Image (tube, rainbow, N blue to C red; front, side, top):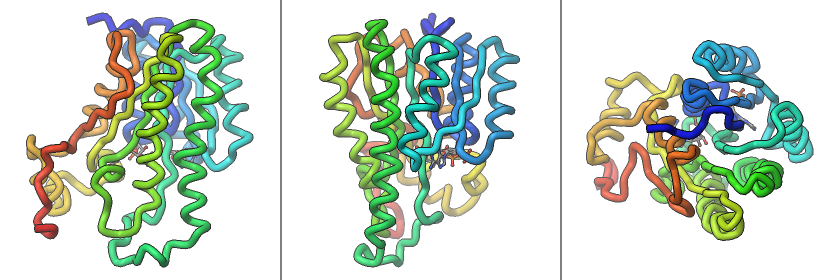
Length: 262
Ligand SMILES: NC(=O)c1ccc[n+]([C@@H]2O[C@H](COP(=O)([O-])OP(=O)(O)OC[C@H]3O[C@@H](n4cnc5c(N)ncnc54)[C@H](OP(=O)(O)O)[C@@H]3O)[C@@H](O)[C@H]2O)c1
């Protein structure tokens, strides 16, 4: 199947590691021009960029910090100036909160500052990236936007959830944007991964991984490459008219209760 990505310009935020890195590599293999953003791991982003170039794509690394609103426009402009616009946006970067999430923390003990920072970065920072890529998509009357959310946005976590709350905002935004930009040829979808096997995750045979896997119908967790393949499909010419949708990967509406929740 032709993914229609040869010569297209793709911006993947948070592409130095994990799902973003896997996604950037896959776009590169499809012959796209890939702009990869990083926040602290410039070296890792450069490694991913080198991989993209070895596999036939073109690459550009740019620093983008979701917590620096004014810098976001400048980061997108760097890409637009280099390649004339952005055809595909994968909004994947994330500001993590307390890691691992503390399930003993009471809702009211999360400070207003942490709520503000989480919503500012993960919702409003993403809005800002989208605002800056849209003009060139509308001008070309073609665009694909994939917002990376999380299963946690629907399922919640035992601990308080600024992260899930900020992510769930992306779902409403995708619906609004699908209508707002659809007539200009821009398709917008959300990918909500479950707990995914990236380099940050515990090893595949850890009890935590087994516990999470038992709660989903396939009984296995997705890898970063699994999620990347879904993202690349939605953010490609192969996606002809799917928009405004939330697609779950490695989690499911048919999720079973986890053992400790029974
Ligand atoms: N992994 C999972 O189990 C899982 C599950 C559900 C949803 N997700 C979602 O999938 C996406 C990718 O997750 P991942 O696990 O692959 O993440 P990851 O490996 O931790 O990578 C996060 C990326 O975001 C960048 N980043 C961190 N803080 C940032 C900030 N303030 N502004 C801009 N960029 C920032 C990092 O850059 P530097 O490293 O250069 O600082 C890195 O490139 C996220 O949106 C996450 O919410 C992941």
